[in-house]
Length: 333
Image (cartoon, rainbow, N blue to C red; front, side):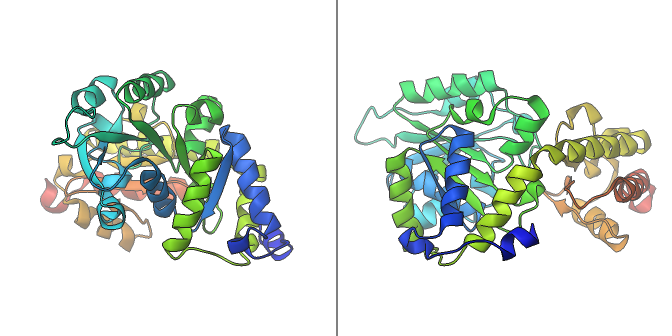
């Protein structure tokens, strides 16, 4: 990957003159079955450009309460685009058509806010790498369209869903007008995401990318990393899934209440450490002291993510640490 970056042909991307960026955008658009794509520095920017495309200031998007767009983007939809939001509850982030139907609001009155976009996340980050059903995604897309709303797919980890299920990327992407995908995470590129959609949507997003300060110059050195990852490392995600599942089994063997291995389908393991008496921040800190890094998603849950730099040996060691800690909470609770 570093050799590909060093050898990348570059140009000025602000003027559309970086050939490596152009190849990356064309490749991702093709994979997703969309007309065009736009390279962005972060997944949050790619997603917020999608939101901006669909939702005018004063209108709303809806998403589940644990979605990345609501929990982890620092209120960007409101701060950048004047967008209001509402949410439904979803167990492990799993999409349910009935939940969306109970919340979506058509444009029926000049005095009521209308839903202009439904955001679907696949796989679901805080849900623990949950894969959304293609059938349900299609149902939600149909529901949204009947209410005059668009669908934006937060597909930062869509690659994982594709590898785990074999469902073509374009089939998932067909359920949404815009799709954001990430090149880092499990794929291993150092930086970068893309927004894909219609040619008109991407042309508008390119203008807003510049307005938001992300007009980039000779960025082909980064696009080359993304191209390399997609061409050579996509299939490797399956190994991450396997190691994560094995680790979940190890932890469940020591502390059954903390995780159900049958719910671990991709590369994320969320441990219910509160079930054995841990505060999640304390559990994460204790694991970090033993060389295992994680993230406290709330007061009772801790998230651990497997990626291509985690070898089977390292995974086994990490699983042992997590299992030992889960089985021995502070005070013996």
